[in-house]
Length: 198
Image 1 (cartoon, rainbow, N blue to C red):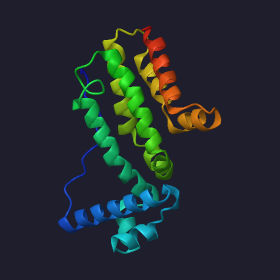
Image 2 (cartoon, rainbow, N blue to C red):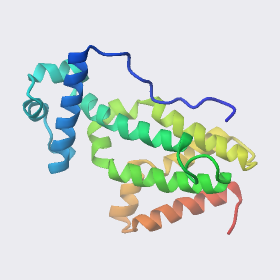
Image 3 (tube, rainbow, N blue to C red):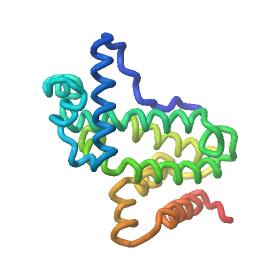
Image 4 (cartoon, one colour):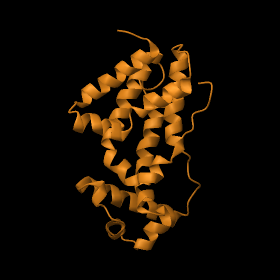
């Protein structure tokens, strides 16, 4: 790629006890979410399950939204790594069109799996520009590889916008589409943008 992708930043090294608390809190939050819905998980419940005071949770993550965003970070980092160095077609080694179609399918699945958590992370996650920047730059790179002309930044933003959780939920819940239909629709959009036909 000609321009580096903005990966999620790695936090500075933590004290051992702080790192232990962070891991315990994230594990506790993940376990609680598995048993119910992210919207029902409180800071009190996370603190109690992790065996720390509620103040520790707030000091470590700042807010409930910050805690939920921290939970999303690992899934996002794993997904970004798969894009950069995982097996094709999502990772390198496949033709650009195959990679673009795999990107849309993979991003759709990730967003649907994480929808409640993304909602719970609220503004903290919505303003995580490294996440949006990575996805946008990757799509822009693939569009360039495919020889697409025009405003690639705008086209990449439009393609990624169609994968936003509210858009996916509208299609699934209000319009009654299946996940396969949603993925197929996005892939048709990608083919039209790139002028690639089957």
